Image (cartoon, rainbow over all chains, first blue to last red):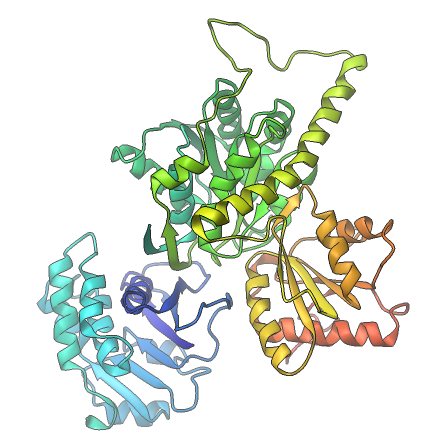
Length: 186
Length: 400
């Protein structure tokens, strides 16, 4: 089973990101679970969401404590939350940032760090405002690239089901997929 | 059939829609709110031909459901925790009036301390109302159970309300794949509700009248028979559902690798789904363990409990609720059913997951270890009710 933990701020769409990525994996025949951290959500406050993906039926109903992948939707969370807590040995961190992956890798003490400038991509596609950019669809596109778990086509199929601005969201996912910097600069 | 990812609350709304509920009266409460919203949306969009009744409380929601059912309409409502407690009086009425309403309860802890998280105190406290109680471990089971609940509740030999329980957040807000059966398939399984006696202005009758002591007791005995009849109806409804969908929930109880198990954990809800993972892992290590998941709490699955007792060296009973002064409700019920049974293995009560505390695989593993130790040691000297992992240091298994 692959376990993914998303860190965002209330209003950025971390919960929807966890669901979209699950839907993409589901479209590829996997069993999935997506759920928010069972906490009280407020706009701007740190939010956690989870996705589990497996080729077998997922029966474990507990939250995720030792993720394979951590996704950070907002770089300022690195100061507020211990995002790498419980990350498995050799696990991957994907961060929305303009910074160099190497610097973040050193700062977090994690080898596999992928980066994507999701905020810029979201704003270029008129998703949210400068104060409150909605980066979830961009980050899901980037996650498809960084993790290799699902194809960008499956992500786009999931994103296109969104009730609002589906086309702009799909475009953001596609652009983020292309713009993702993989660990080791590959 | 269409398979789609959805949260438990959406599966709830779809279940009620596929069952063709005709009157929905509900009042929002966290974490049930998105059920009510989804139902209102489906009706407003014209996808579901039903009457949505706005009410000012859960008490009224249940009262409206009873009234609708009295006229021969299929009634549905949903609530959680304090909302269910407020319904208590009318649940008694619904059962006594023999109105087969179905409600979904999102299992949530009772306050104070105020909480919105998973806990079975709310529904287990409704034990004596005469309402049939189902418990679910995934979102598919919620959808399926609503349809099955109507099938059982409306059976002329039963005629009692039914409540389908799903864990707060673990199901209500968790998205997972759910197979949405075709409407025709559900229609073939669940015929329209046609009670032989109903409120009808053309044929006036009185309901809920005053009654003298020489008659009251018979009414209660008939209710008791209806509830007892539900056992066989539930098993049959489960078999028939399997024939058309391929899905079965074990009838009265979902037993997982219990047949040759020496140590069995018995409990309700999502934590028992997690426990199945642990059973597979322990079996690989050569340990003969199993999990029995409570599917129906009322009527109580006494035959299934006795089946477990005939096999196990010891049974650990997991309660996500408590009867203050006398252990967990499931523990008490289980022991009570075994007193007059020839095989009575030792039982130990584990209070877990109360107020939404996450029940992880390592906790279940620890409980299996403890149960084996308990059985080997001889169980006379040990407290039989164990609050697992208390952070106040009063239990040994806490990680620090």
